[in-house]
Amino acid sequence: MLVKASKCPADIMQNVSNFIYMREDFRKENLPRCSSPTEIGRELTASDSWFVFADKQPTAKLVIIAVFKLERAGQTAKLSQLCVNNDDSFDSVISGLRREFGEMRISNLCLRVRPADVARYAANGFERGDTYVRFSRTPAESNMIPILPLTSVAIKDLSVLAKLIYAAYAKTKYSFPDMQSAEEILRATMSGDKGEYLSNASFASGGPPNLVSACLITADAPGDAKIEQLFTHPLYRARGLATTEIAAGMNWLTASGVKSLSAWDRESNDVVRRLLTKMGFRQDQTAVEMFARS
Image (cartoon, rainbow, N blue to C red; front, side):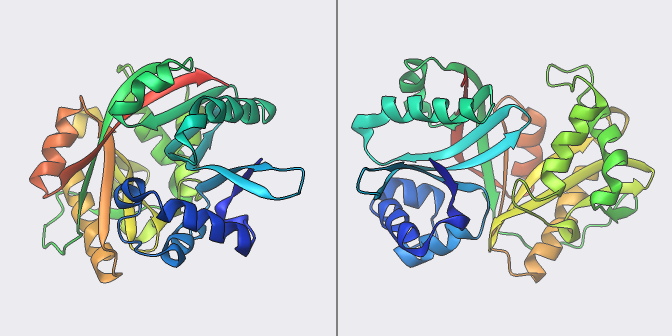
């Protein structure tokens, strides 16, 4: 059975927290500020993204099989930060997850895994996709002057942003099949499906309806923020717009006491890599996307 960590009873969450705490490598990589089971439980339940995969025994006792983050986009389930209870049962865990998602009418399963685990997933029927890298830094205040007026964007700006992101990815292999698909991606971000949407830290350059670049920021847990979307119209690139949007977002995050800002992007995206590195971000994680039908 699958259940959100935020919906788990206290006794189950205690078992989950202890389970994660004992896996030191996973904890240090994914929950670095948690130094006790209590802190782990607090962080897991603060977000609707964390899920628990458990097996109900004949005695009615739940045995924790795995813990992971989940995003659902249409018929695709995206998993990350998967922690399996027993490595010897890895194959059965993956099989169980594919069965669970199949019953939920999710046809595609996507996981971000460590490069060292690619072979294990390939042996379970997964195909390799893009390699992603994560960049992180502590937010800091900036006096950067915007080139164009900055607008704080909220769900009311969804249709305008959808047109912008659709144009930003047009004529690339990552283009959206239609405007509705572009809108669904943004709705998932701005409605809280990917963590709390921080509208006060999310900015677009220009004034509605003439937005030409945008940076959308979410928070998975207290003190942790993430650049969820960063996109610019092709005609307005290389003008420093994304830099000023990120800087404006960091000003708000700093005033709000946020300790970490991160961003995931494809390893092949040299433009984003140069931008984030120039702004003081440092690469700290690498993951490979693996795909399979559930």
